[in-house]
Image 1 (cartoon, rainbow, N blue to C red):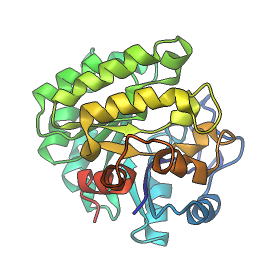
Image 2 (cartoon, one colour):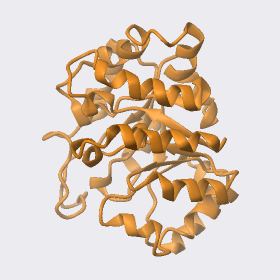
Image 3 (cartoon, rainbow, N blue to C red):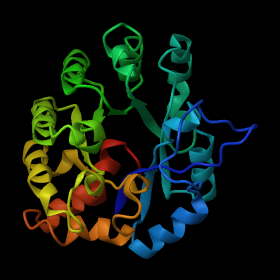
Length: 274
């Protein structure tokens, strides 16, 4: 079972379905189910976790549409407006939405301040209370260490090695991966080994990323590491199939059992996606 732990899909920016002002997508054309499904079939990817993209705002309708059209093949880590504490009323029934398995939160600058000024404080205890897994992206890992410690029953999943593109551009990839590895001491934290082609300075098989992937794998173990592509973030850098074989054929430190966990079994277990 091969499960992509992160895929964005989106529709066009239109008056009846507007994006957030000033936001630009990862590709010039919408990345739709009609494009994604044949690519998954060709690459041998059985399932995917849909993460609604931030440029569409806090909407989850297209992800839920994918679940309805392809039952069992997709699940959704939905978005919720962190600036609106009244959204807490939606959490008791959050996972009753067909295919909704959790929430993904993003902290793009200047949203980093939401982690320190109280804006997001309402969210963590509520997600913990209702057993809603949370994927997170952006900001310093030290913020999430505090959250993990205060909310030990809250399942937290660090996106993209716990690293952002700005960190890579600043030459701080090794330092940032080390900060993510330090979160492994919290049993409720796990990590997506995703977006590695985007972060790599080399072509396939992205050998400069091996040391970072292994560092996180050694820290978290096979049951808390998840393969994922975020393919639209580096669409022309590798085929979908190459993103699979990067892990299944070129990372020699992974045993067959490790690959079974990392390539799908672990994320299914963590999200309780049957």
